[in-house]
Length: 223
Image 1 (cartoon, rainbow, N blue to C red):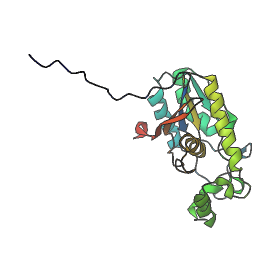
Image 2 (tube, rainbow, N blue to C red; image 1 turned 180 degrees about the vertical axis):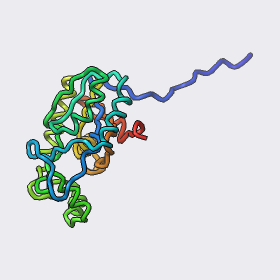
Image 3 (spheres, helix red, strand yellow; image 1 turned 60 degrees about the horizontal axis):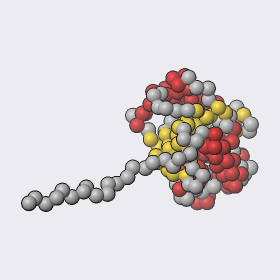
């Protein structure tokens, strides 16, 4: 008599988003205009507010192509124009009007605002080493306190999640914001995820019990 067929056993399980959770695609805006060392960017609410560079406009188009067939329920942008310009091609494809969430704006850099950060990095400012050592932007004189930045960005994502249970949402934001939110999601060091590329996609699943990181710095649509 042949041996009876054995059951296959327990297979590995795919991740399933918890009921009521919200999947949020955190998109960093496209590359913004080059900083003029002799003239700061125009300010909006105290924040440098440059438009996209031509390369950033191309990145935004590729992002729209990548996500243009996804079942996206809402698009969020910040109060700064580079996020609006990045979201525009995707919003047009989907027929959605982006929603402004001001609390997802970039960290305020105090004395280094308006494009000064880029110049200080290029010249190798000694303060940059201290920023990286402490992993906090408020080392810069006049910069936004870490606790304030953390509270407003996490609060904004929580509000978005509450408004979109069991839905897929895109939030076009900033590099510092992505770094802070993924630090909160994973419990990592604060700057562990501070290197998101322009127009990259990172993915979190937000639930009242836990936030999950599903993807970081996906740029396959740009290459």
